[in-house]
Every structure is written in C-alpha cells, then in structure tokens.
Length: 134
Image (cartoon, rainbow, N blue to C red; front, top):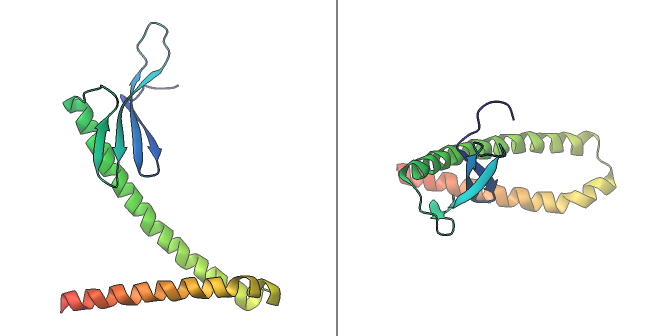
C-alpha cells in the first residue's frame, strides 16, 4: 500500500461497522488488523470487542467516524430520492413512447400501488407540517 496506514479501519455493514486497529509496524512488516469494537449506527451504540477496553483516543475516533458516516448516509438518502424522481420521469416517458401493451401490463398495477402509497405518505407528511406550523 502506498502512503501511511490509517490508525483505524471501519468495515462497514448494514447498520454500522466493525472497528479494527491497524498495525503495520511489526517485525514481519505485515498489516495486522485487530478488531476493537462493533458500531451500531441505528442505536448510536459502540460495544468493545471481547475483553478490549476502548481508550479515549479510540472512542473519539469512533465517535468522529459515526458522525461522518451518519452525515454521509443522510446525503446519500437525499440523492437517492432525486434519482427516484428522475426514474419516475423516465418511466413516464417509457410508458408513453416505448412500452408495449404486454410490458405495461407487467408493471402497471405494481407501479400504480407504489405511487399511490408514496402520494399518501407525502400528502400526510405535508399536512402534518402545515398543522405544526399553524
């Protein structure tokens, strides 16, 4: 690997990460990774791995990673919604100009139900916002 190794490695998973301390300064000059913690972003929980006791430095690094990861996932979530809007527009164009009757039959019911559900959620959330704002 080129450059200096990071002190910690975060192996991301569905709702968090496994945290490893990285060591490249050993006699064999091999990279060793020792698991030190498990992070659950949903619960905002950090559990030390095994008998390991987290140092203040480790806790701070994990907390900083958690904050950055939560912000990244939030940005990705909004970006996914913008892509969904693009996909809906492409679907409308496809249905109008390219789709065969058989292709439309295969997707229409499912798509209409999903759009109906989405519309209901959006209308309900907008109404709740207006109620809160007075």
